[in-house]
Amino acid sequence: MANLTLAMDETLLYEARRVAFERETSLTEMIRGYLNEVVAGWRLGRKAKAQQLMETFKRNSVYIGKRDWTREDLYERS
Image 1 (tube, helix red, strand yellow):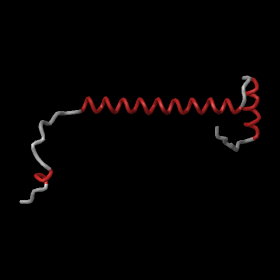
Image 2 (cartoon, one colour):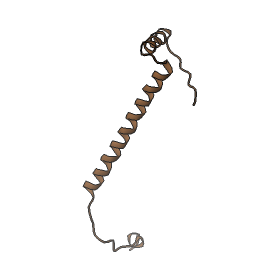
Image 3 (cartoon, one colour):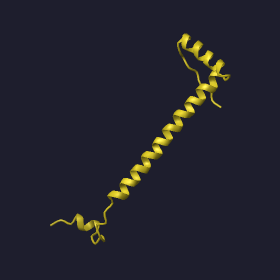
Image 4 (cartoon, helix red, strand yellow):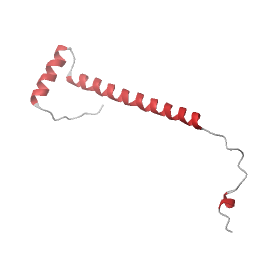
């Protein structure tokens, strides 16, 4: 497991330690839990956006028929 160093106001650190003590956990565990929630929400958001994009592709797809031209046809000079 990797280590992380944070710089913060001493008052905030003191109060955060009090909260952790009252919750019978560690400050490290509180921060780890918060970051897990943030990442889980981010992943869920990305998955939902990808699903919306796929639905948009399906809804807006059109069949234009068989391709009966070649690339060379497009660049044919007159």
